[in-house]
Image (cartoon, rainbow, N blue to C red):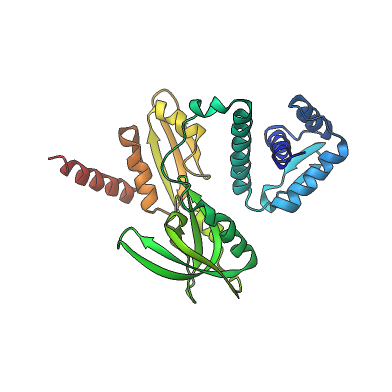
Length: 300
């Protein structure tokens, strides 16, 4: 079976376990059969082992519930894994459509925001991270309009708003810097290796933030109120993994998120225009007010 087929099978197995109430082995097998996969017990057992080995996702059996579940606490980067499955399966479905008809592209509109620029650097960057090798590159800075050469210890590849970024540390600094791969040129993976600082965990640092700008400040509880119509979008596409629904009725959709406030949070709030109101914290309410005043002043 093709790699795409295997990933599709993984997706269905994960989907059944996530949505089901501790599905039994037979229920998982039946679910696969209903979606076109007629496979043996050993294949499913091997899939569970491979999902654990390749992606660090712990699928366990509960004797009390007589079924399978995902051990989120002991699984590694589970949100990244779910996003990976989403990307791969979308690509597979589009590929199948194109194979069936070359005219399929006439009926598909892609975002033309330039997200693929620099995509050729993804593979060498990922290999550098895995092999713990230093990298060097030239990078264009939007703020200074200058190109500067950097030497980086790469730790993480991060996607945000259809663009990819490399996250790493420079020299002996105990903090991370982020660089858009669409502005990277002359990438060189060095033979020189580096020792990973286990005290620096970029995934943990970004867990409490929206976007790319992280800080070591403490997280805060942010309460946002949306119009009922806009709330339907926020419900199906949460702003953050910490999102909790407080009110959901015909008058209001109110949520709370626990994040470290940053520039991207402010931009996200402003993007929703008059469909959103910041309830807490008070300082953020005032910051948004001042921002809107400055925006209004541009139109006088």
